[in-house]
Image 1 (cartoon, rainbow, N blue to C red):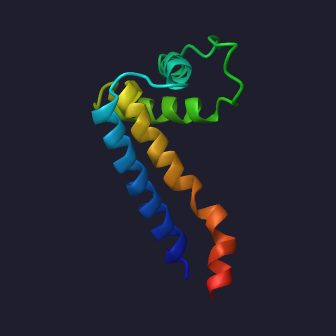
Image 2 (cartoon, rainbow, N blue to C red; image 1 turned 180 degrees about the vertical axis):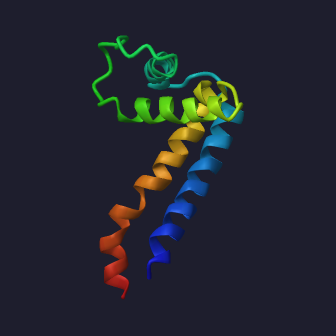
Length: 112
């Protein structure tokens, strides 16, 4: 049963990535609240942790995760693609895949 959470994370991540790909094709520019979150995340990607948009009320966890992923990609020679608008949608998809399995555990217990 240890593979079930991994499979759930993979399935969720792939589903979220498909949605991100569709969004990138249909709406390449920042959309809705991305107009606030994308510049904030890009500031963190540049190491500017002193910048904060007062209109944002969410904790900076996703911004920090994107900045860390971007730094890792830069170290591997992948450039700053992860901090572009489309790249950040894929980072969100990956974070969604990681966050999905814990809430699904109670449902999986009901099916056993």
